[in-house]
Image (tube, chains in turn brown, blue):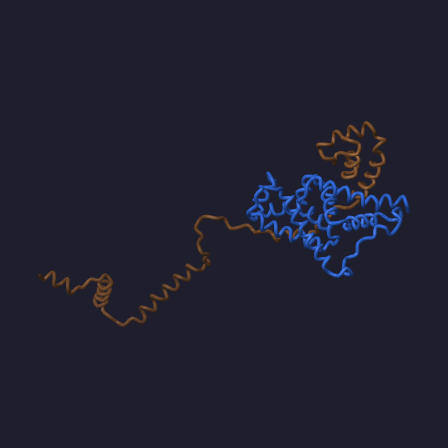
Length: 144
Length: 181
């Protein structure tokens, strides 16, 4: 540590040696202790400037700015994984049953009068056609 | 809530954890606002810069890799936004530039406390941009020489040179001016 270097350090970092770069701090302290009068003027000037800088109050964000910064942040995402079912209104199942009951009632009311046996035959016919089954061919096969 | 590290806090904030977001804001916004205020000498503009800085941070968080300290990165973003605004100011007519405090107006001893603070704030803002930034980072915010070098994207030696010139200018205006007045 030279005298010139110590003067430079005081000019750059001020009078408080704890602010000096760590690598040079101890050497600077030793030199200053050895020849205080040599650095007295530099230390006094630096101390006055340090005091002026220390008077500058900390700049704190207003509550409004803080809230704006928080509000601009990403929002929490929904938990990943798991089956997500569509949301139903609590009355949805009840309305489904009501619709089914109304349909059945209307069906009974508008259906033409028919005997139970003709209804049964009609239902059988619908099922046979739906299954691709031909009753006439089946009867012929039985006859053979 | 206590966070184990910067990275933990950043990861939680990126996922939208409100406590982590608030912690990041309360931890870093004063430094960013202070830097912008010193650089721009305009509170409203400094607040705009702070908001823009954090918007960029939120965008960067999901892919954040801890190659640099978050604080360093954040201050660098803020500083670059300040440089942009200062550049735009220079593009407008000189008559439209905001008034800076005249540090030579009155004898130093006649200034009251508020005036002294205002005068030194004005003097810092009137320094060349990089000197003002270096002084704010090191002398007012307590960043180390290495951190300041990283934020300013210059060498440690260059930071030292900026600091020396900044302090010399301020000393000449405030302290040597006092003895002559």
